[in-house]
Image 1 (cartoon, rainbow, N blue to C red):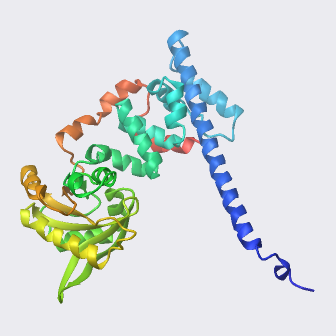
Image 2 (image 1 turned 45 degrees about the vertical axis):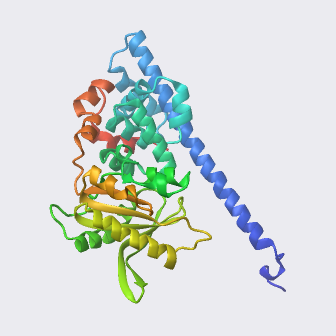
Length: 358
């Protein structure tokens, strides 16, 4: 008797793979739809609690009773604790318009919603970070890190010559890809650090470094060897950017920016273009020069006549943000005042997450 496999049609295997892909897509859509339904349910519950407290004079203790009754009625759902009901009310208070929640927030998990409420005061900032979560696929913990390090405030802030050295729209995308400063708070480094030690530390924490660089960067290697006219040269770090479709050479400097650094980086970009880049598939190689500090005017003068696309940014080892960034983040007192006195403290978010269901 022939085996079952030997009797299968020749096109069975690709057909099976297509079905598997279709099922996985359907599962993902179902999961997203279920999450959206839960977020909208929580918003509507919060909205109703707010309305009754404001219009009918219901007291704060009514939430405790609601938590007890809803938990008794739906024992399999752990999202009806007193704390989570208060988050629902805060969520509805922060977003009074249902359409905004449905169109721009419902794709995020409830855990992300809590983080946005706790960490940000400005509604436009919340929406901007919500969009970034959707674009980059950040987890709740990564979202918190990006907010605390001022991700959106730093994005697109490097000094560069992309508008003159790259064609559109690549020049705009490249400018928005780089940030300033880069925050390396995941490294156990402080003060003056040798370049090789900084490089080794970044390689050891390459996953966190990629997160700080942003979406699209793929690590190629460090101390990448180039042989030019019989002489050996080594790139500190080499990446490939999937959206820009080009190589990105990252050079690390443990001192303040100096004009000669850009000259050496231009040499590296030319060499990578000739020795590594596939000119039919890859765009011009881009350089990112990370220095301990920089004077913007000196950087601008240096890049003004350069023919290679280079961005210059500083780095820091702590989350001590510039004054304007620090002031843009709300204090605990201000946040509690906005969300009402009965909103749980920020440190209680993890317990609220355990009470929520997806």
